[in-house]
Amino acid sequence: MDLGLADAAAVVVGGSGGMGLATARCLAADGAKVAVIGRQQSKVDRAADELTDCGSPDAVGLVADVCDAAQVDALFAELAERWGGELNVLINAVGPGSVGSFEDLTDEQWRQAVEAGVMGMVRCVRSSLPLLRKAQWARIVNFSAHSTQRQSVILPAYTGAKAMLTSVSKNLSLLLAKDEILVNVVSPGSIASESLVGWASSVGVDGNDPYALMEAIAKHLGHPAHLPRAGLPTEIGPVVAFLASRRNSYMTGANINVDGGSDFT
Image 1 (cartoon, helix red, strand yellow):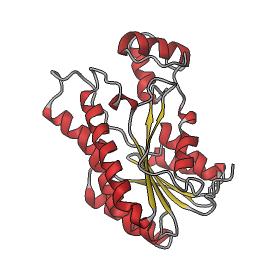
Image 2: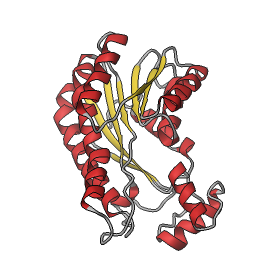
Image 3: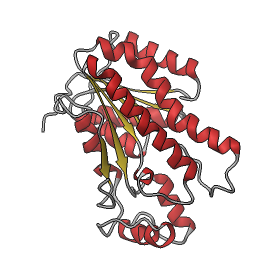
Image 4: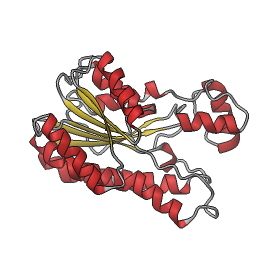
């Protein structure tokens, strides 16, 4: 399907790997100019090269810490100059990494979860809004998690941050409706991300086998899906790309589960 992304300007925060990169590939394949944002120059450069090969007419990898407002402002100022002051797509795919039981998590770990999981998105939206408003059409897609609907006792900080992100995104969809900027959330389920594959290894399971990975998830985390396997990052990218595209012309304020059938809430 032609998503209408040819020559659109898109930013994928957290786009140097995993689900963010899978999404960026879909945007590039449809002809979008794509900037991937990460914390390691080598990774964003490698991602940008890959996106060029996928068909992006202008792919760039930029380094920024979304926990630093000055860096975020400088990032979007640079992109405004590069792309003529307009932005069509902003995707926030950064996830907070705090894992641990409620009793074990420190105040600093809670703060880091909110900083990375919520405030990074807030800063990126705030800095990019003038560019999004200037564009003929614009979309924002934020990554949440299905654990906001189906709790895990080892993810209270992660889940709390994602729940806050989901709520703020809903508020943004209301605020920006008058500008016809569509804001949606995608909530991945058990996806074979780098971190989940690494966790599987720690419990003696080959996380690269999606069926074995789902068995481990069901046994250790209590999060089985209706489908008998974990999902793949490549199964998230097309969903996000559609929400971020001109083909999505009337869906806003939605939270889309991509979770193998674990929850319909």
